Structure formats: structure tokens, C-alpha cells
Picture 1 (cartoon, chains in turn yellow, purple):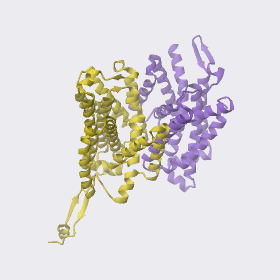
Picture 2: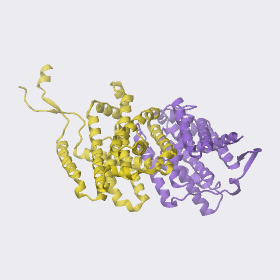
Picture 3: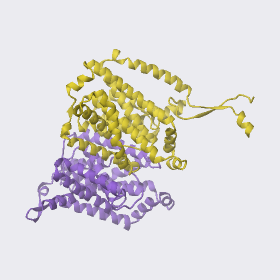
Picture 4: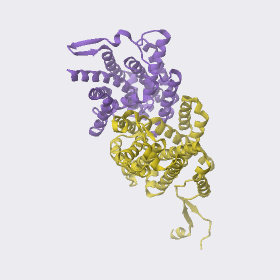
Length: 345
Length: 288
């Protein structure tokens, strides 16, 4: 036995050929995108920022639903809260907008903790609707605060906007880079979380909760951490969204269609429970939007129908189909044992 | 007296919420399914009623003769054609499929009926009231809705505890596999459960349309009220659902009395309070 163990030459690998090649291509593409302000027009830059924050929202929702089994229909609570927090820091506390951005994320983390203790009392589908109720409470609550513009909302004062950058171009450049940074950061965050100890626990929970618990995973703590991380990041994304729009109102900031329905469709169509899924999903989402933008409500109907069809026919989404067929893995979070054919020494 | 009035209005409003919630309780009880499209189906029923009334000119209450069977048939079809494909250990497929359905129904209604606010007219009945004291009166219409909610729940109790079909429902709810071994076709049974649930949804939709204005976008809020009534009352208990609806209705009308902007918020806060103090609801019955 001992002999066999020393003879079996193996190593544990995580990176794959696809992930190395994919990584290089992604870095090149990213470098190209980073120079966007010099060759993309203003409208295209805004679209890239939008794609960026949808990708980030999708990654966070996927982390919750795809890995921790926490299907939330109430992430708009944190999008809206982050946005409002930014406005409060800038208007009421007279802070520069860029400094308020990370503070808005911290503020969201602080309210996410008590929120978690309320919604964690519900399970499964009831958790989903419970998070929605909480988001409604946030929306109705903010609509009551007249200092924040009440139900009709408010705009960021010109002085605060000018403080970001003197010119409109300068401001859009800064927001563009922040948007790009948040998109890349969200992918990196999920990737690193899944490769860490926490990720192993999460993958175990995704596959079977009782089995994970019996192997010593603290399910409650793991889920709580994931919930707080996703809420904090979602708050930051919300702050960026409000900074790009320069305006906030309860109905837009806490919109279930914009910040949750679209995000769920992106993740489900792309492939839930994978990092690649939301990336594919966001591409499909924006392509469909460009093609069907003129059809109004038919667009949302077809999006819903596609999501239902994907869920029934291929629950692992488009990425699941690709990965099964070609066996590629751009974000390897699994460990693989590679046996080598070397003869024993 | 003013407060008594507020509370009575709240209790009667609770009857409507109980009607919203009964279908949800029923399908959860039989097959542990939570349908996110539930609220949109209520609004769909209201629009169906409107279409029937506009086409034939009959009284909205009479339109139930057409709307209830149509919704029940739709329920059976949806369950057999869609939801049965998603049932299993994983909660994600039914949740996401019903979420997709909700978006589809909302936008379909928007496309057909536009975003205009509509109402079902019932003439003099809308303003009729019964005087109880000098400055205390009960609207006849809210009272009818409340009594109907009680009648529907009584009817469902009879179906559940006095009929062969009800026994099959309860058996499947307790242990689906053993029930199947006893010769129960659970796919058909689930279809029937959804048909009954949407039959109740049809009644709820018509009453919604008679009591208030409605438009294609209000479905999700109805789902939330229904859900809150179910959780406040306790999972799987029909009378609990009625109690949950009443608690929600009273909380909302007290909130509205304090400040019109507080109506919905007060309902949600009452729900969260129950969740914190009694997470399994006031009259729990089922374990999920």
C-alpha cells in the first residue's frame, strides 16, 4: 500500500488549458475596453456601464441563488438602499460623490444584517417572497421621507455633480472606469470566494444541504456571509447606478422588474450556478434588447418565455449546454487530479 | 366610534385578502408549490370578467359563471403542461418558472388591455350600506365579499374533509409516494388542485375588480398580500388564512387612518412583526 502511494505520481490541478487561454484573451479584451473613453462614443460608453452593472448584479444574484440556495426576489432593496445612501452622503453630509460610493456599500452592509435575521426565518419559496416584502418596506419607507424627495425623488445637485469632474466627458470617463471595475471585481469576487475554503462549503451546500451540514459545514453562517457579501456588493452597484443616472426615486430605485426580474432572467438563461453563466446571460440579454427594443411588452414576454423554456429544457442554462458539449471551464473552481504515466523511480 | 369603523372596514378588507390567499394555501398544502404568478392570475381573472361583461353586458357577479370554469380549466392546463414538469426536490425550477409566468401574464395583459386603470361596475350596490349606529355603517359590497370568503373556505373544508377527492388531496399532501402506490394519479390530482385554486382565484379576481380599480401591473402586490395572509395565519391552515387576511386588513386600515401613505407600510410591518414573534404564524398546521 505504502509503495503504491509513493508510486502514484499525481498532482492536483485547478487551472485548465481553456482557463489559461481564456484568461489571456479576457485580459487583452479588458485592456482594450479600459481605453474605451478614447474610441467609444458617449452612448456606447453608457451601454458598457449598463452591461457592467447588470453583469455585477447577475454575479451577486447567482452567488445567492446558484450557490447558497437563497433565491431572493428582493435584491432591489439593496440596489435602492445603496443609491439612496449615496444621495444622503452627498446631499445631507456634503461628501464628495466618489468617497460616498464605498460608504454607501458599508451602509448597505449595516442594514443587510438585521434584514438577514428577518428573512432567514423563511425558507425556499417563502424566503423569496419574504425578501420581496422587505424590499417593498424599503421602497415605501423611502417614499415617506420628504427630505429625500418623498415619492417623486430628487436629483443630485449641480455642485456635487461638478465636483466629480469639471466636464461631462470627464465625469463619464470616471463612471465608465468604475463600472468596468465593478463588473470585473464582481467576477473576481465570486471566483476567489469559490476557490477559498468558503467556496468548498458553498459548493457542498449547493449540492446537498444535509450532507454539507453533516460534514461540518455551518450552513447558517455560510449562507449569512454570502447574503451579506451579495448585499454589500449590490449596494455598491446601486450607488453606481444612481451616480450614473444622477437622479433617484423610490419606484425606479426599488424596481423589481429592473433589478431583479431582468437579473434572474440573465442568470437563468446563461446558466445558474456557474460563473460563466451570468456572462453569457448578460450578452444574450443585451443582444435581445437591441433586437426587440421596439416591441415593448413583447420583449419582456419573450424574455420570460425563454427563461421558462430554458428552466424546463436545460436547467443549467446555455453555458451548461456549451460546457457539457465541449468540456471547457473558464473559471475552474474545482480541483482535478491529474495522474501522470511516469514509471516509478 | 371612528376607530370601531376603521377596524370593521379592516376586517371586511381582510375577507378579500383571504380570498387572494386561499388558492395559495391550497396549492401549497397539496403539492408544496408556491406560485409567484398567483397575483397576476388574480388580475387576469379580473380582466377576463371585464371582457365578459363588456362583450355580453351581464352583471359582473354573473360573469363568474364563465370566468370560474375558464380559470379552473386554465389551472388544470397550467399544472399538467407546466408546473408538473418542475416538481421535484429542487425548489428553484417551480419558483423561476412561475416567476417567468408572472412576467408573461403581466405583459400580455398590458398588450391586450393597455395600462389604463379599469373597474367592474355593479351599480347601486357599490354605495349601498347598512346603518348600525348614528355614524357607523357597513358597506354591503365589502360584507358580501367577506361572507363569500367564509363560504369559499367552508366549501373547501367540506371538499377536503368530506369527499374522496379531499382524502386523496390529504393523502398526497402527507406522503406523495405512498399515495401513488395506493393508485392515486398525482399528476391528475395536482391538476385538479390547481383547477380548484384558480377557481377561487377567479372569484377573488372578480371581487377585486368590483371593489377597487385594477390595471395589469398590480398583480405582484396582490401576491404579496396573499403571501402575508398565509404566513400570518400559519402555513396550510384555511381558517388561519382567513385570520391572516383579517390581521393584514385591519393593520392596513389602521395605517391608512394614521396617514394615507402608511396603509401598505403598516400591513407589511404587521407581517414582519408576526414573522419575528411567531415565525410559524398564528395558527400553524403544516411543516414545510
